[in-house]
Image 1 (cartoon, rainbow, N blue to C red):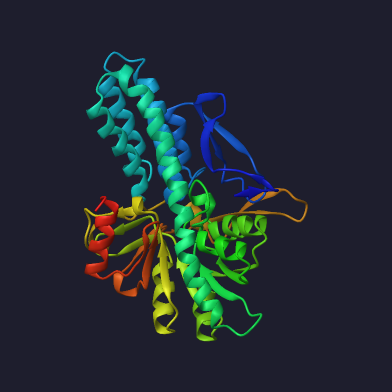
Image 2: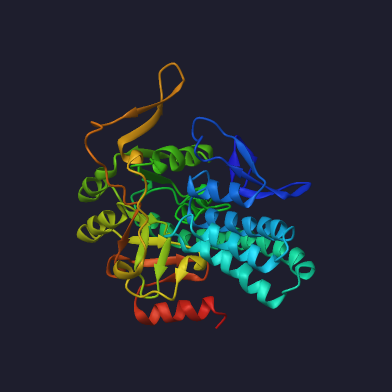
Length: 372
């Protein structure tokens, strides 16, 4: 996508320096656009854990590039295999909920089993890291094409000149992937096709990824949008001001349960009560076929309570300040994700098409992902 008219990806190997990973520092957005260079596995792990990069696809691609650095570092140690495995486990520990991270790491570990000689493995590790990132780009592009049909159908039933109103939660835009995004990919495709759209952007407390990131990237692409408080969505749905909800996902189980940013479940409940379609957009790499019951099996990350207690913002003078929102004597709980049961999901928008969360449709999707 574009930043000030220039195309960018969220993560890539630095041109001319393939041992350096270049990322967009998402902690600085929307106040400043800065590229950061990562030169070690320790730096990659820190960037993922502290959310310099975030979002399922972006985390997965960054971890894939991190495994390429892991191979380079392990090649400097006496026992290549144990050194590589140790770094793989280090990366896996950074964010437990998003399955794309483990997906990228495990693909490199399987590759090492197939090509155990370091001299043979090293160039393949770099190629695999690039492949994972490119697969993410193409998957999100196809998600946009498939989701476009939903938006076009809604537009055809709207009064002339009225936009299709879409609500999204958190940031499942191109910043959360390598390019295009998942939940935003159909929106960008519709906008490019000349279909009038308007996006309700949940602020998404406590880290405000909607207000800070989704709103910023929609503005860069000149897509009409409005930032709303997290608890506004139900009210809008009750008054017919939402035609469609599209969110992303950090993990989807084999029975269609969806782990996504905290608050997604409440949007799904409101959508069901008001007969608003609720779709989840995701590349198939976010599917976790090893899991069934999402409520019982998906690990829910609990982050530092300071993220709830404190908020960063820009003052009238243009400086950035962090303020505390409530008394320091009051503890804060910070559950980063929740699980939306499959029964509340109208469908999954994937690179293979749109699938209902029925057992039959999920079996069909699994065959597609496994090459069937």
